[in-house]
Length: 204
Image (cartoon, rainbow, N blue to C red; front, side):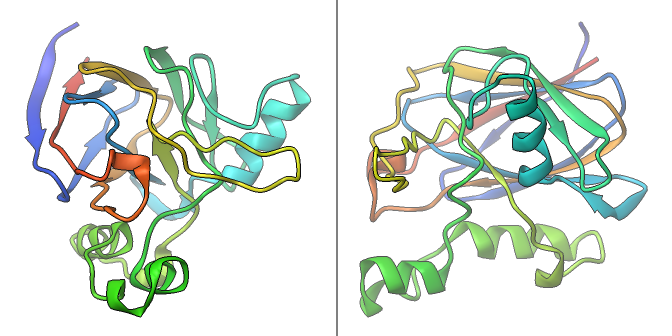
């Protein structure tokens, strides 16, 4: 593999890149317990984008789990493969709990948190670079985020389980626009209450 780029993304910051078919993206949790939210779009037609519903329905049909790990294929709203997880040291990545926002912060943690920075803001900032807006926000993947389902069906955000230097690597099955929010959340344990930098390596 040849490294195309090697980038450190600061705590709380956004990032984006266009992956060509066959290239890989490795997302590295440098300090541990850092959630990394991600959106995916067809690089040539942004109306085709990642679908958590199609991805999980396909996995269920294959006898898979509700979370993502090595071998998981991320499908678009057209039912086509966008990326595949080819390596994973964590073993659990969420695609059910969504991205934090000013509105959800207010509902979950109190009005005083409304103006705290959020993943939704990061995504909107990056979307604008590609001629898109908040109307183009869709379901996302939360890499390294531990979201177990309780026996009563409730989703709960627990302490992250990734180790320092843990990573997940995905291979592009089409040309894909990848948007990243290095999650700034400090009100639940998805970041160990202390957001930290991550590293992103693009290879081919």
